[in-house]
Length: 162
Image (tube, rainbow, N blue to C red; front, side, top):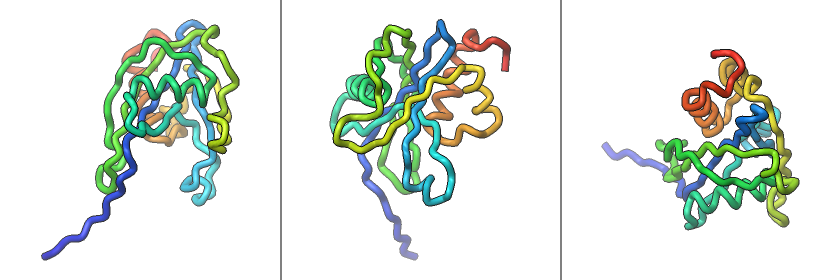
């Protein structure tokens, strides 16, 4: 019996969930995604992310955080290098958490000029993030994994235990 498989070669990517441990907020973005729009759903809250295009993941995510979030990142906490769609795609996504402070908000964000990303930047409270995880509202896979990692690795950031 012959089996035919289709494989997408998307290249690899990187994503980060920046969080401010002092103000107890995190930064997420919102941007139009064709699959979500075609399903008739509102835009997702997502971690900052971008394609690697051959770049070092740690270097590339610092650039993406500046472009998309107007944010300067310092310390990166590696989480995992996931296969988001292993049945059909070669894509790997390197995930990071990254603490930041108010002073690290150095720009407006919104995406790189000329890329037409239409990005909206959101800072949301960590208690709200936890609720989005627990009630199933946070549906972007990479972002859900990163939020869960933040909950597990830094439980002292929340005002009340989960």
